[in-house]
Length: 516
Image: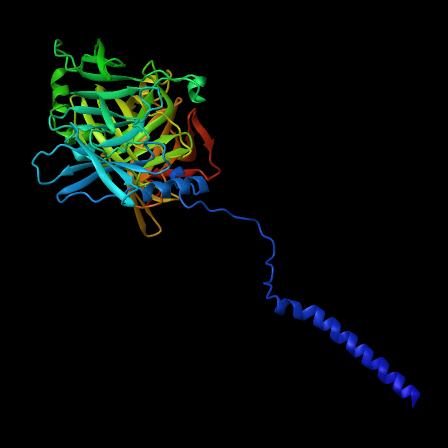
């Protein structure tokens, strides 16, 4: 009997131990609802877009969202008034944002662009308009509104640029006045801003920024005032491209920018009839002239491959390329100037980023560009786009002896592993592959004594431009464009070809050469 009881107890203890082990092994997962851990895998990061403007870092997103939130007026405008541009920031250091709004009155024919100052009112607990002033800008699509320390004394200067009805470039600068602590900007007799510059000319206007001292950067001393340069027609010369440069400097006694000196700048001697056809006041004529690829030119006028700008007229886009960065802007509108056109554009990804280009004719194959932005977001790109540019189709002047000149466009069809590639003499291509058709623009050009081909897909969002190193498999004296060629995918950089991509070479033969 005792032996049976002992065996029962042993069996019971064994069962109880097994039960406890089972509970400990299975139950905790269900009690705490722990998800199963997936096996470790290689982390694959897929970029959302190729543009640095869409780099989704926290600092950039915070800045972008904050800026977009401030694009609306904080106080209502009157009937018939429509917003042209909004500038939101803390103007008086009270940790409360104010606004400068550029607007026009639709009820007034030929209305100038006005600006109004909107400030927070502690008594009403809301924002209100307290000051208005007209400017000399009349074309709303050309307006650029931004702030800058023009005088070097850390005062805020509001700068508004644009075009007037006469096709002149204009600049108005207003300095924010420092009011006594017990006086509100809206009180009678108080003026929140004082006009310190108002310039208009039939050329271009630019603020000449200079590097300021470390003491200024640290807030220990004042900095040098910036000068303003205005470029216009030299009426004493028979050459249309001859200009005068008028320099304006700030006079503290008069509290205004005054003319300092005039410099005569000789322009390129070009056949005047052709110049008049380009500068006849029709922006569409000049747009057709600049359509295509333009490379930055160094002091000697030779391409240094540092950067280039692509004017895509059919798609109304401006593409700025430098090193590994590519920025695409929507071509909003163009206005004729004395020497070319004034282009307003908007970033394709960051719609609040606007960029204006003053493009002037320098010669029949070169232009001079001055770029300005009304807001500077941190895009990871800090390139200066000002300077002279030459057409890509005229880039062969810098080639070494023995290098075949490059013709940008051709009329030919090729078959290869990628499908059928058709080049037309008007600069467009068609690629027939796997039952689909891809269309776009193309250009052959020379760089670093080598020939390259660029394919720019059109009408397909997300497809990048492709650049290929070109090899023709025939003697240089032969008919180049009817022979075999090989394309090797490359990436361009500031020093030329930066990288040969590890992709299979594309072999192409003239259509019909293999019986196709």
